[in-house]
Image 1 (cartoon, rainbow, N blue to C red):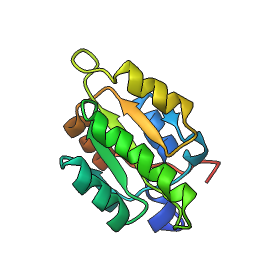
Image 2: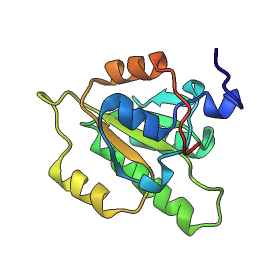
Image 3: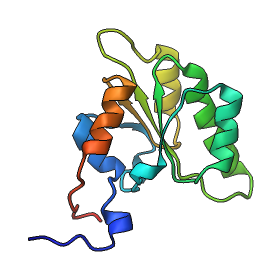
Length: 149
């Protein structure tokens, strides 16, 4: 028998939980590893860059976005929006991005990988699964209490 206190917060996966689930680490934004995201705030990005940027500004600030590795425009737009909100007096940017693509078929471009590794930015994770598989795993995942929570 167990009890999960503060279900809306601790009952949702943190990025550290997703690192374990996908056996990977954040590429950048390591300070945000213990930020929690609800399943309701999981968002697969299939739109244009302009619509995605609009969503970043209008949706719940703590949204977990999932995008395909071939969408360099969305990845760079995500990082640019994070940097913009840090410069201006705006509410904190709390979004995170999971970049998906099967290892044998798609790779994150070297240029984008270099940009991400040099930034002290928003949390970004690269997962070697399709977007569909990654979202299925997140939906099926039951987070465990973490000593750092």
